[in-house]
Amino acid sequence: MCGISGAIQFDDAFDLYENNLTRGCYSSGLLCVREHRDPLCIKTQGVFDRENLRLKYNITNSIYFLFHSRAPTNSTQTTWTESTTHPFYYKGNYVAHNGIITNINKIQKEYTEQAFNVDSEVIPYLLHMNNNSIPDVYNVLEGLLTSWVVSDTGSVMVVKAGSSLWLDEGSSSFSSTQYKGLKQIDEDGVSWVFVDKILKPYSKFNYTNPYFI
Image 1 (cartoon, rainbow, N blue to C red):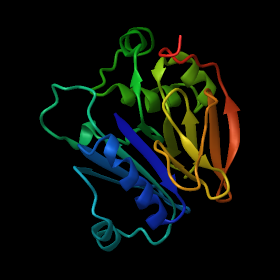
Image 2: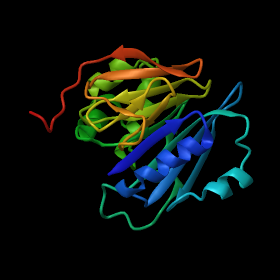
Image 3: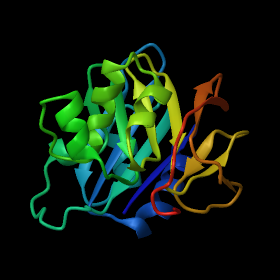
């Protein structure tokens, strides 16, 4: 089980991250979206320390903070590595995913010969192969797919497909877990885009939750 979250202010985002740690704390990832610069990506085994992040990294010029906390779905994993920690990057996009892709083997056979250590790695790969089209990519994937996507240019998207998501469009905060001021999103197959510091409805795509059939 994993948790994703994000907010405009660092402390708000960190509060949401801490609230998600009940879902898993094996590893953590943070992406700081910065104006006119590549996002800053930080990964660690275990849990982030708020003040260490603030003091060690230059995050003051960031306009959005996105977190991921993870409990591995693969019980055989015993050694932490940065390469198997969210977010994952491929040719222009960072992706952090809360869920499981149930048709990963089919995807690899039909769309790519590339091997992935973690199923979530296929999402940024498919985005690159499909001109960053959220509907085209998430129509192909099956399973629980809720995630956030950030491009090198700083574009931020939040996708709701199966896994839980709580959202406040006014403050642009979101979380996998319930938190004050956030509204639970029930509609699947939808995404939001971060524009002018506001998360706005962006696109819809076909999605069937395999666990509600």
